[in-house]
Image (cartoon, rainbow, N blue to C red):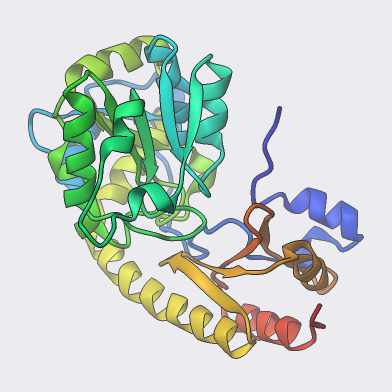
Length: 340
């Protein structure tokens, strides 16, 4: 089974009969003003990737990972999402719902039992937290910030969950694909502990989804097993080069956090003014709740505005516009919509 994702612009263009060049694609949650990729030296294209090129050290410094942590460059966090289930015998795995569906799909395909984890289990209560639900799991996958709700679980809570799981040899896997705009909430600084695995990506904040580059930070036992599954040269030389340069560009990262904060505030206000019910978001997207999300998605699509629909529960996710023309087009499309 192939899952649906945002960014399927060719399919939208064909379905709605609108040329690809005319679309405003807000379906992916990817930074529309990505890191400016420089010219890649010719020798990078001509030589095999070299593991001792310093990239792992750069990843560790960027993420704030301690020396004990292992850092593995991967061809996008999706590669790790698909590979990690192969490192354990069939077991019971908790997956947040709603959330990025590739996690549950990959564990299920590898023969594991997938258990949905909802807010009623993780939200605590009047008498404090009750983590006994974790005792039914061998692995918990968490998405922080969540996609598509944008919910952030504090590091203290995640570390408490990890400790409870690890006592029985369990794992906590944290997908931080959208974390770069809010690095204070990252668990990267705690990696190296047995059974704690953190996934990072160059695709969202850096706007470099096409390069397919990311990193896994974990203990060394998990890292060695993951390397064996991924095989030699999992990340291309050009991808390693681009990743190293982007991670070192801290000035761009700081400026981008400010710009994204302004842009997502603008998006939030625009959606609120349109009378939509916001349920959450991150620095790269905002999500609204609708009983019939496909209806509004279609109304926007006939105006060449592409957004991402989620049916269970009903939600639409809006990414950021790149420029003033994009913001005006989104505002106009929302103003012209009809209410169900």
